Length: 337
Image (tube, rainbow, N blue to C red; front, side):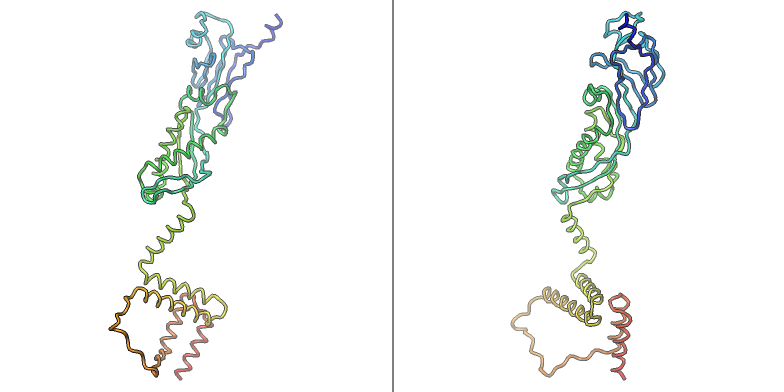
């Protein structure tokens, strides 16, 4: 009699879930559910009655009175008479069907994919995703098992591993060059989401949203792409020579020595241009060797006004300071007088 009185008959069953919780098994221990007990299932939840590991009856959102009439499967499994009024025992598990949002994914190690344009590539990527329980039976059997509760944080490492595998499968089988996919991250996200959803389905989950926020290539591959882009912008070797000359002028002007450094930069740029011009021009034939210049010939002196105009352009591009220009301008004007 005393043991009987010690038992507590459960007459109110409900779950006040916290953010990130996926499932919770009501801790009955040796308690029994009272016939006519009240079961409260809130929006975004589903309550399942489990008998010896087998899912029996389900209850959706609402207030339910537990009687034989609304527990037909469980009653049949227990071989109870339809008119039973006694307490009964059963595991009750609540599942949250809410979307688990704001989760992050990323590739801990580069993923090797076969690209249609570049061949084998090793990519790093990261972004965000969300998921929810879609089918209770596979989730209960393969994920929850006999655990008393389960949270989304417990599943995250397993889900990120599935995402990494799906990333390689989506990019490798698409046949679309990486640059075309990277130009439209929404299309890339949708393609990967299809593969992620297939992987999640084995656990009774569905991927509600998936976003690729960044995709990066190895540094050496990115350097080659940057170099190719630079050459396409420059257009030809003549533009490349002028570009290198301008770089030399700016470097020399900023170095110590002022005009001396500028002269060295101009000389270096001139040598670079001459060397590239000689390399691109055809070699002279033996019969057309140029005659040696007379020893007394001297290079004509450049017009001071033209020199001043060139120096002024250097001031405009920032390769020559105003003070240096004024000093050189005064020197050249003195020659005219």
